[in-house]
Structures are given as structure tokens and as C-alpha cells.
Amino acid sequence: MRRIRTTWVALAVIAGLGVPALPAATASAASTQTTVCPTGWGSLPKVRSTSTATPIENIRTGRHACYDRMVVDLPGAGKAGLGYSVRYVNRLYQDGSGHHVPVGGGAVLEVRVAAPAYDPETGAPTYPGRVNRPLPGVDLTGYRTFRDTRFAGSFEGETLVGLGVRARLPFRVLVLTDRIVLDVAHNWTGAR
Image (cartoon, rainbow, N blue to C red; front, side):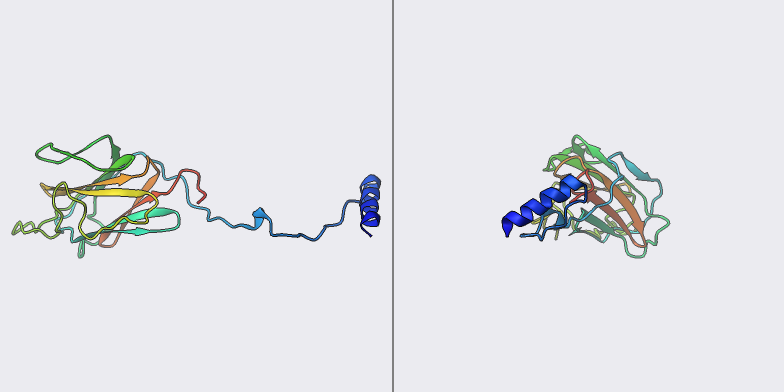
């Protein structure tokens, strides 16, 4: 039977009739699906020049299929006054003193939020971050891109955070009501 089928397939090819599809014995690698991730964010600095007196109350992170996310919460700030500057730097320096703040990872993002981490009237801290220390409540276990976080202080109405990432990867910054969102892609290619 096998010999007859082989002969028939050979004759069909010679005659130009094509070869009928043979049943697959196993699932092919082509059937494995991958997540296609957005691209085009780039790694150049991103800036929004505006500010607010509404203080930062929390900084948190999350994992997603295509990127790792950092969120800076400013309850009551709305959307219009939220400003930021996010850029890759060789080293992170504390505002005012100029002291170096070491940040782990293959690359460092300087995340500057145009809002204080203290009450502007009383000076009391609204966010419990301590200079040179990891962000409170942030555990980066299991993250694909994030490696380290460091609070670098709040000076003259601006708050500075260092975000250590695996490598210099594309990122985007979004402004939503009462929060600033920073997404850092897992890679450059767009595929997971």
C-alpha cells in the first residue's frame, strides 16, 4: 500500500497535478502562538512641561505581557498639571546635594515628576520614600525588565526616582487622571 501511494504522489508531481495534503503526525511549531507587542516607543527622553502642587502619595509597579509598568499616583491632581521628564542617564544624582544615588541594572531611567513628595504647606512627607533606598512596597521579583528602584528625594517641588532596567529599552509615558504611567518594553523587536 505504501509503495502504491509513493508511486501515485511521484506521478502527480511529474504530471504537475500537485501533491495532496498528507495528515500531520504531530503539531507543528507554526501552531505555537506568540504575543505581538507594540513597538515604536523609542528610548529618547520624554518630557511634559507642567507642574502641580498636589503631592505624590504612592509609586507602584506592575507586570504586563509586553512591558513592565511604574505608576506614580497623585490623587486629586487631575490630568492637566501633571508634568514629567523621563530619560536614560549614566548615573543618577540627587537634586540639591548632587550626591550619586546608585541604581542597579543594565541601564538607568531618571524619572522626574513635577510634583512634591511632601505637603507644600506643612512640609510633612506624603510618600514614605527614603533617599538611596528602594521604593517602599515595590517588590520586583518576577519582572522581565525592571531590576531596581531608588528614591532620590523631593526638592523644590520635584520628585526624583531612579529606575534600573535590564538594558536600554524603549519606553513610553502616559498621563491619566491623577497618575503618571511609565511603561518599559521587554525588548525592541515587538515579539514576546
